[in-house]
Image 1 (cartoon, one colour):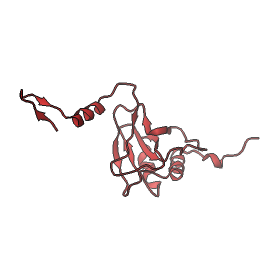
Image 2 (cartoon, rainbow, N blue to C red; image 1 turned 180 degrees about the vertical axis):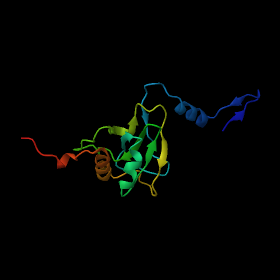
Image 3 (cartoon, rainbow, N blue to C red; image 1 turned 90 degrees about the vertical axis):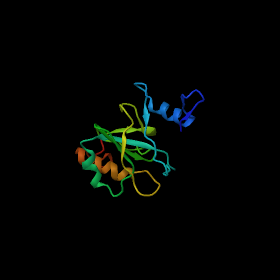
Image 4 (tube, helix red, strand yellow; image 1 turned 90 degrees about the horizontal axis):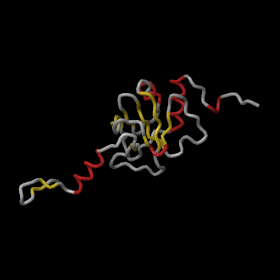
Length: 146
């Protein structure tokens, strides 16, 4: 809320200044996807980044879709922390620990918010859907090399 000082000049509140500061971005500074208000991330939060052209192919293959963020070039799916444990996410997918998206020119838009308070897309169905649309064999299905 802005108020007028006795001089007639506009004085900005602390909330407004904080909001303006968050809007500033130094090039090269990583951005973090935020869990929407009213939601909790009890298992921590990471993100899986996929090219935007693959997003619409992955979406209908999932039994549950959590928070999904997007810009013109990428989609990010929120998953519980450590969802990369024992998984090799296929190229061109990128795994973002802490839901940090360092190369995003701006904070991506939230394009899907699930009902309820949990922001996660289940990682195994997401992994399998990404493998399917990229033509990659899941790591546990590959032949062992002796």
